[in-house]
Image (cartoon, rainbow, N blue to C red; front, side, top):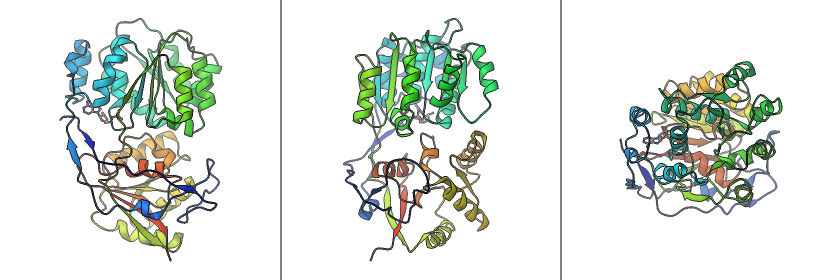
Length: 407
Ligand code: AMP
């Protein structure tokens, strides 16, 4: 299977303007964060579907061109990767060279292997000492990185510790005592264990910041600064982000040295997604309409976005009670509950997943047939992020957004 990258002409610009109230019946419901931006309903509509221009990326390298040992090459092949994706093709040579790299790439581009493979190669044969720190915004993303790490490092005597919140710390402390090569985690728990002197960063050689923009959105900047402040200045830093804002730029300037930038962003590619709005009188009406819609056969794999943890859980319970089995992921669920829900959805054992933006961030959720915005997103960028879950890999996705009845 060739790793394909699709490109689409044009992009919608975000020109949302602020408005006092919320739009489309969504409530902030006690959640923190910036005020909701008004998004004109026309921006949720795209009937003229641009034909997806299928571009098969022709990589300039084959995996076998990279100076990876036999076992690593074997693990790559075993994972089913035939050709490098764009970000892998372009970033791996620089990472091998030891350069700092900024990767403007989002989930789905193959960015995880782009940083893991060359670092794994470098660590192979090195004595047991923690030297690589990978920081990701969510537990799920950290776990996915750890799973990929385990697949790629099979037979190489490399070890990792997964340091995330929401689960018992005892096992993590045990894992750390074994002096793993890789520490993969989320900012809060990492900082906690660092403050307890259970993680020592002074001998680390490599730092990866994955989805840096999301980490800033989630308020992790002080934790990240504290963690990175304990690392040697003389290190390699790999920095991944889907967007570059002035805040991100400032972080890049303080953390990276003479970096190379690789851009493979696909976030604004929503032209191929059929987008429409559904007018509803109020919340109850939205629930009724949604329940009816989900009874339709073409709703094969549906991701429903809600605004608050409570709203998401209530909606999922309601769907269950209406004979439409669903799973919910949100911040009030613990790690294993979220993992179980995600797995059920991924394995097609349940066809509806209701999620908050934060819980869905960074997750590798395979193609969904429909994204439904039960509550409107906070801003247009989040909208693009949400609907990007559908219409991948040649499938034509649909995105539907509930809005207030327009008079
Ligand atoms: P990522 O952007 O790292 O989350 O990767 C997205 C998905 O693409 C994951 O399921 C990867 O296992 C898969 N993937 C990454 N690189 C390749 C490749 N070169 N060939 C095939 N699949 C890949």
